[in-house]
Amino acid sequence: MMFQPVRQLVRYAAWQQSLKKNWRSQYLGLTATSIKSISTLSEDDEKNIDRLAHDILGKQRSEDVDGYRTSSKTMRQRIALSKSITLVESKSPKRRKMADSLFDRLMRESSKTNTFRLGICGPPGVGKSSIVEALGLYILGLDKNEAPEKIAVLAIDPSSHVTGGSILGDKTRMSQLSYHPNAYVRPSPSSGVLGGIGAYTYDAASLCEFANYELIIIETVGVGQSEVELAECCDLFLLLLAPGGGDELQGSKKGIVEVADVLVVNKADGELQDVARKTANEYKKAVGLLRKPAGWWGRNKNDLCSDDKSPSTPPVLLVSARTGRGIPELWELIKTYSQNGKTYIDEKRRKQRRYWLTKYLREHVLEAANNDEGTRKRKEEIELDLDNGLVAPRLAASQLWRSIITASSENNAHTKTE
Image (cartoon, rainbow, N blue to C red; front, top):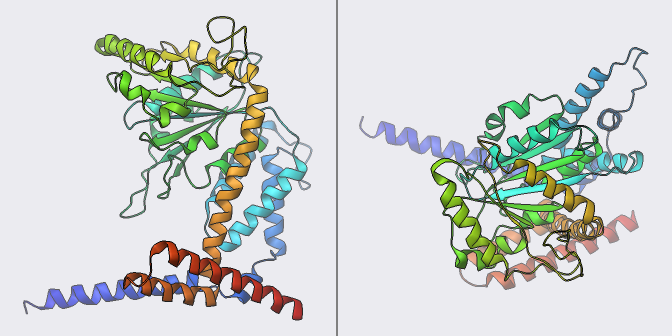
């Protein structure tokens, strides 16, 4: 009797393993025929994409009556935006095809709008969500002629490396901003992607722009010194620092401080006020050694290189999300950046588009290795040699790449003969 629980545990483990194997065979076992079957979308899929595109762009549907209210339009837009972000985050081949079709339609039907992307990152516990809410509420409380009318917040939550799940609790911290009618707050998991943002954060930000959100705030997970991918997704890179979080030497280190456009020391209130001021002074000394490239935005009438075109250093601000100290000055700095750095921002976005092109290309290459039956078998053979120590990982990758190229050539030749 004492071995009965052990037998049950072994059976349960075997059952779980069989389920996992069946799932992999169903998900990865997509032959060339099955991939070809989802290359064309059904009529219902096309209608759904058309409906999403119309609602995101705020256009009137053909079935709408004359009494089409603005409130209904706003609600439809928010629902369509949420569905579209879920669509682009999906790993289903069919839904990915639908996402590609949606982006193609939005690019053709939308008019170019003036939007701005603000990236906010920092170590865990520095107060990123608190700063986002305080800044967002301050901006939405200003006159429409002085600030954006609509704000979107993309909050990235870390995913568990054990279970793969995420709490998605950043929206809970922004209780006031989440209920504001002109704010859209969307938490998304990082899904194990390093760099501080999710795999499809760039796409989500683009969808918010199509929905005419003038300011998109991207809040990363708690990051370290080398996680700087946010710089490839935003116009202004804002780094939050904690009081007592480092000295002058820490600020001089290469990495995230080097790519930041603005440094903000949060929690400058109460007992931490003096410590925060000291931390800000230390970083001001350090960033003097980290010169920005030529063409950087940092030029105004005060001390940011107003008379010449030489690069300047990032500003360091003191802010308190709890008391609101420094929030107006931070917003004025952001406005100065967006107004004075249009040429620099346009060039930055051009480089960002090429970066994400390369990243998505890598993803397609990996999918090709998993979806093609012949390539998948070759991959299993190479992985077996890799496990037995017969081949180095670098050489194994080269062999797998050659197999992908060969399989692609054979598929093209087979298609031409048909």
